[in-house]
Amino acid sequence: MKFLHTSDWHLGKTLKGRNRLDEQRAVLGEIIGIAREHEVDAVLVAGDVYDSAAPPAAAQQLAVQALVALRGTGAEVVVIAGNHDHQPTFDAYRPLMSAAGITLVGTPRTAADGGVVTFRAPGTGEPVTVAALPFVSQRYAVRAADLVTQTPDQTAARYDQVVRALLEQLRAGFDDNAVNLVLAHLTVTNGLFGGGERLAQSIFEYHVSAAAFPADAHYVALGHLHRRQTLAAPCPVVYSGAPLAVDFGEQENTNVVCLVEASPGVPARVTDIALTAGRRLRTVRGTVAELAAQAPELAEDLLRVVVREPARAGLRDEVQELLPNALEVGIDPEFRVALGGSRPSAAALARRSPADLFREYCAAEQFDDPRVEALFARLHDEVSSGE
Image (spheres, rainbow, N blue to C red):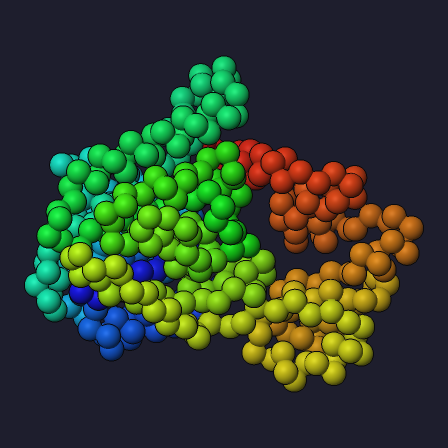
């Protein structure tokens, strides 16, 4: 059988206020075309369909259209919720999407309660078993009381135990005569960040070893980390990565969809198919004159601009006139020092995210500890979401 593995669509994601729905639509159209061209038997979407738990209507419409179109190619479609998705909503729409031939799994389930999805590959007739594990939150796995009374090592071990138990329970649904797959959204030990993940729900205290996945799985299709990577394990454990760079931290990533071929008793074979839709993200540096010289070759890209000149009135407007797609304009730190510690305006501060401001504060204080940054991100998520 053949199937596509994709994840981390993040529909509805904006970048520095820029709506990217047209780019997201183009990328999903590319994936649909690949599914049709290769006549795949299934499409596995490993979570983070949306960028937020309350996505705009246009993003929801795009997701439904894309999933229906993927099903229209003749492929089975299985989708799990990620940490950005609203898991109960996925479960609420499960019966409706099932009527359209699309399987949604919002919250962790037992094998008997829908956590294991079975079907026959349309093209080959081979039986297929998919153990589906949506995002397991820290709150789900570790009680609030444990967070207070136990050490970080103990709570991390507890999280690992819970996820392993869930995977082992789902593995009970495997069939020796079937293609057995795992579809999950989580952090695996030693996985590399893509650059745009939500740190509060990706920090190293809550991860699972690749050895936790069943050795008899033909393939483990993962979402959550946005970088395409394969991790050492008894079976293929693969992050497909995000199909579109969601932030400038991901500008060097290669965006792909994974085409996987597998048969009972035969190891899976993976082919990466490059995705080219969507604008390139680039960080450019230079004086205003140097930026002006580069302007023609940067016209189609979304830009983060670092100006190598001291700040002056009207500098930002001057740069954005030269480079209309400059979403972020900043001063090189070497030139900021020369300003004698002058404070940015309230308007300038308002344009920057709390995470950026906190990161800059830590840098100014020469305080470098990723755990503190992750803790700040977690607390900000909780405050801003009202949880």
